[in-house]
Length: 207
Image 1 (cartoon, rainbow, N blue to C red):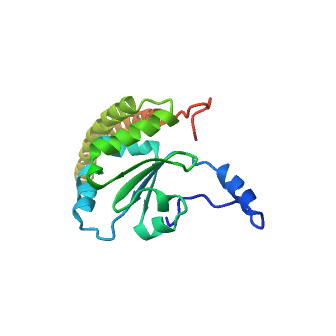
Image 2 (image 1 turned 30 degrees about the vertical axis):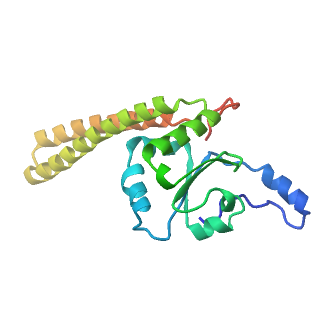
Image 3 (image 1 turned 135 degrees about the horizontal axis):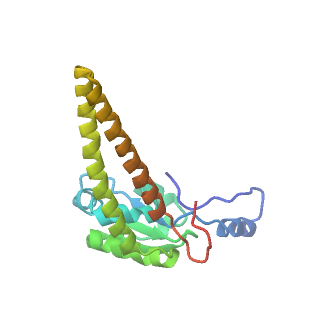
């Protein structure tokens, strides 16, 4: 993505009218913008990519945001991001109305600082509790690991059934497959319920 700032929805209007149109635009979620370094092998880039972004809480917390990755050159051309911090890499948290909330750069680029920025903006935007959602979602991910093991076992069983071709093995496979499908459906339903984000001041969860 080469631009974060919203563009005017109309053309041929005065500068004042254009600014008013842009001011009325909001994102469906707050934004988590990663402005990259031109050197992908720099120490700070490796620190972010290999440590901070792989933090499980950061990964789950990103579900509250619209995540955008862009180059330093693109950020310099963006009418909002060009004045949001200096140096790269850096992270910019933006409210739904595209105003800058927090900028993280330099030695502050670590998981704890990212989580602090996430929590602060989430608390302003949503009724959902950040810590509770990340905790519960990590539990779901642990269940997903178990379901993946079950799926692999079923794949092995299918191979054995094909080799043997006996009715008893086929019946066992069908029974276990049905149970597995039911568990997956239940997991998907619980994930969907957990990820319903309730914005402050709105009665219905966002789509």
